[in-house]
Image 1 (tube, one colour):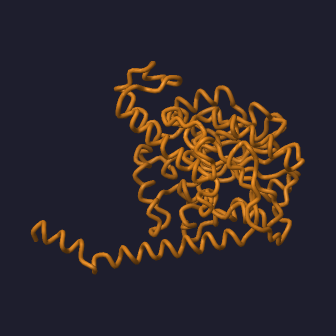
Image 2 (spheres, helix red, strand yellow):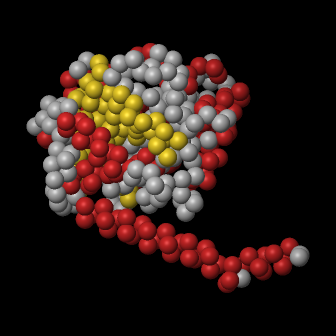
Image 3 (tube, one colour):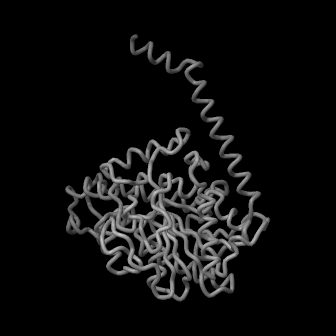
Length: 366
């Protein structure tokens, strides 16, 4: 078959039918997801440090997740709250918790930056939340990099924190981040390439990569309802450094609470400064053949060289405090019930895992 024959075949109406079918299915699934999320409950969308806006209507059905202190949810790298008023970062999870009586706040920090910058932004929002709720403390949940951000808040302002729950969080760094950082670093000329923690590299390729991350960060800021004048500080290189093994080691030296003594070790404590620490995570990348993001996560898992991981974070790196489980059949996005709620058949539903954890907090009088 000639090249032109291939082109005609690819452009034929019959060739488009499977594509159109997939697009239609995706649109229907997204519509169902959004409709069910809106009907399920209410939560507060803290898109920036200026305040929180009540979202949706409430339908309490039980007191299963009625904790003493509010639940505060922190997104990961490139994250958002409710993107363009349609897609929740934590897909339907705030609403599910609200049904059981939780008071839930969804926060927004710089989508792309290091965890100390993001953690300080989160702390300011936590202070606002305690003022709004009238409660002196909060229960912090953080997905991915958000699980590091919440440790920063617990470390610098423990009086505001009742518990910390890290979800699929690279507490000891991500080998995917190491791979990207090590690929870009040899040609960097700003600062010490092996310990570039302050200045951004001047290599053109690295600047372009960092610029793309910064653009994504600005996009999710605007999509979360932040005006162009209020777009939060973005820094792609600093985010990459923070998520690397070296960056995580430096962070952990400052904030060692409830961390294992070694990589792949188990945490030796589950509490510090009156704060309870928990974590859970998954393993596997392709957990639903219908989810296109699974195949991307299969690619990003290559640097782990067979070590159990969720596509971006290893089971060993995710451990913090009381390890609920580090082997759920979930990939990195499944643990926030993304994309479109397409997760592994037969495994615990992400919403159920969050509900059980919040019930655990309730039973601990948190």
